[in-house]
Image 1 (cartoon, rainbow, N blue to C red):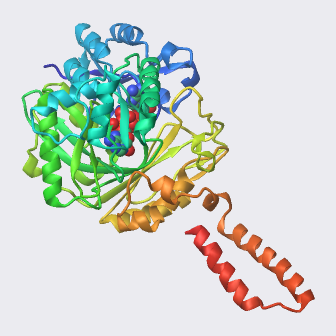
Image 2 (cartoon, helix red, strand yellow):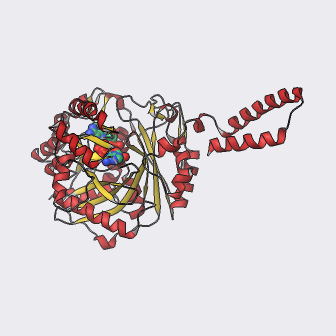
Image 3 (cartoon, helix red, strand yellow):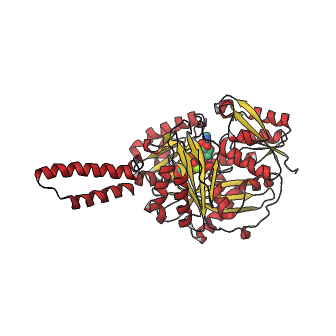
Length: 498
Ligand code: ADP
Ligand code: ADP
Ligand code: MG
């Protein structure tokens, strides 16, 4: 296979920039695409050439596969990297790219197809003895039958859209009385959101952790795993904080999960970079959830602990190179943490908070990596995912990575919009996180937005003022006992800040 000379990145923002940086390092020319909303974005400015695809909505720009392929022909591009989101898991697009004689930096269209359907994926891996969450192996067609199966599995259960993604298309059913109603909603939602009404049932794991394995496979049948990423801190079934390695995975468990992930990859003749997601229950038993056939948002934490540039590996694999290392040559060095900086208001149920980055000052220093695609003064467009940046810290161990992250978050100055930074600082310092004993319900269990509503000194002043009022009132009645009261209140507000 020929070397890639010119690569078009069919994406935007931080991931487009991140991919182009590696391409440039490898001596490859870069082409960016953009919508009218992203005309002045850093990814456009960075690229050697850039092509405007159309108006801001994705359907009129970043999702226009034909237009992207036509641009490749015009500019003499020989390969397309799809990033994540957008066209990255669109099998028809991957096929079109190959048919146009271009290299798709990703897996084959057939691997994408199999793994794009959660049901087809489960069927494919069943032969490889991969543990699956108890549930139905086929799409539900008969409600009575499905209900009987649900009782067998035991409530609560989860109804999932086979074509779902991005944390959408899932419904929890607490008991049998809600079953039919929820099933009908799930089917119509699956049809309207994903164009595929197929749904299935899974046992709802009540104290789950989300732990995934990064894999790399070449086109000559060699597959390796690059260990795990812990992604249990989520809101709306979507990740906000990730780390590698996980605080609860032992070397034996790591090997078992890694080998299972390699089995999943083999089940669909996978090549390229991919992620096999598992759900882990309170006994640390793990079950296959799904495979993401693309570069993952949180891939930097794996890069930090393995020293491998995953985009570089993707490009080499796409060029037909053999992997240059074996499983035995891979090892974990240190610990990495990533927090996703979203333009969202944690105090308002993490709803998007779009606007202008009035102040935008990144943290720096040893062991600090910021992957972003914005500059101060820019607007966060309403049309796309509201992620501003990924802040990654590296340390010799978990405690060092956490400590560095606290400092980096404090140094990160963003005004003009609300972000998830304050929430992330709260979360990584929380006892549950520090001890490693947490699951995907962390936000529901421990996060009270009040902890972010005021800063420490403001809260202190407010409480002291309230105490003063109370004290004066009591003094008038002759019953003031200030010292004890202040102590109680002090511990009360310290608790609020924990
Ligand atoms: P991760 O890479 O960790 O799985 P996300 O689950 O947040 O990250 O998804 C990565 C990107 O892909 C996000 O921009 C998300 O919105 C998008 N995405 C994933 N699946 C779908 C889907 N089925 N439809 C639309 N967007 C999706
Ligand atoms: P998506 O394609 O949207 O990423 P996933 O199947 O990967 O869908 O699930 C996303 C998240 O939903 C998981 O990380 C986990 O938090 C939760 N989840 C999925 N399946 C289950 C389950 N069976 N029990 C409990 N939680 C689940
Ligand atoms: Mg997933």
